[in-house]
Image 1 (cartoon, rainbow, N blue to C red):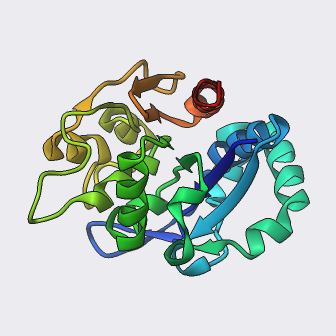
Image 2: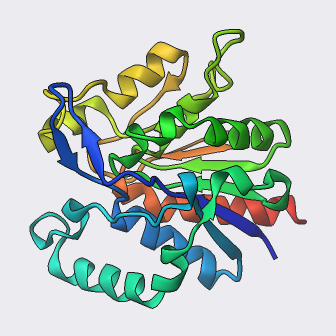
Image 3: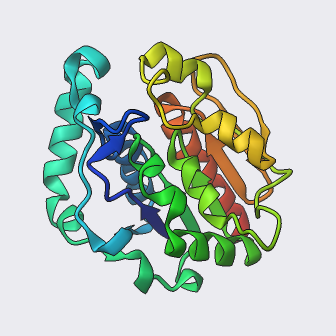
Length: 235
């Protein structure tokens, strides 16, 4: 049985370029869809956050006008059913990377507030990559990859193919103008070989053990890619 660590942001706001606070957190679809698929496949799934803080679900991701009432109802039922797991996540500082087969990182704007600069997030990713474990961020979850940057060495993921929430999608969402930095632009600047599919459509990029999804619609295919990779590693 595969063991998966889902790392969630502990942030409930995103600090904008002008210092204002934008309600944020974890994008419901990205967490729910992947967690649900992993559990259904028989995986053991742990949840961890910086400091073990209970994550906040981004209110925008539970807006029927944004994601549809049927989806909101589904996400709410699922989140309510796992409320105990969400209330007491593990602390990133306590994570033993060797215990897991995959590190999965959902988005929302939370990761661009905390995970991108979290030292323990960086440690886990370095250890996971060195061991060839599956690393699978989606949407803004790729911000966590930036936590491995160091002044003394090249970025761990420089030269690697990946996707992430695109600058074009950020513009269409209406959050680009006051953003302190744009994710895709920053990943490219750090040395990523960035790729994108159609705006808002499912798109997954695989580069060895790094599997990445572009946006919320990529959550399901990314989860399936993770399960396929884990099945292959256990043959």
